[in-house]
Image (cartoon, one colour):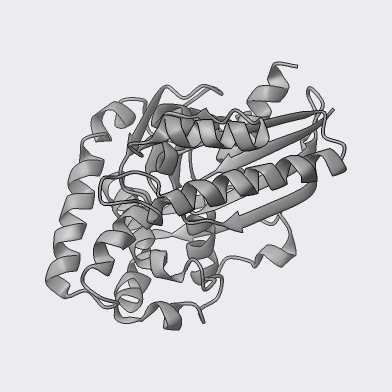
Length: 308
């Protein structure tokens, strides 16, 4: 069957059309996306703004037309942190449904972690043994650990790269050393709350990182460019990342966008993202992680395919 999935993230809204068959590799057919930055479309009361809700409804409606033109037989959609944490979630979902007919499923942080863990397990396979997953999005950080396809322990923390970047923006393009030190302390304190439950699963045989932020950091630290294809092994070493954090802190977003793997749209978030990933690797004593090209969207697709 041809399946369409609309992924409403904190930064990007993305329609992916795939050819899906039980037991087969999901084969991408078409991609349609836009940077809506919903997490930045919040009112002081924490609601998605009128403009943000309108733009989302319009884009999802566009997605239905694209899906129809591509021969999609089933169109699904899900939303993550930006919609989940908004104070007007139900109103935004109703607006999208009325405009497009699409009923977006709001995923909990735990479900995000479990679906992303499934994607990583399917990509790397059983031979990888016990996995430890690190996934950083715009609004939240997801962690997972386990030996099977279903994670034995997961955690979702409000440490997304976009969320923390908005906090840093209050201090200008180049936050002071004091501001960064305070943020670093808070990041580590929140990650530490999840350490015990994840560490109890056991020493991982493989540590995996997913998300655009981690892929960008990997490229910055020497991983192969995306043009070389999904199947080229890519990794991120903690020592390389640690060396880059102070350099990123000293740069403006414009300067970061000239670095390998960092787009203009993602450049503002790279410092906060690097600080979070570095903290996880330090607290869990990870020297190197392997970068997985599949993440939440693929996990959602795989779960649906399992039900066919």
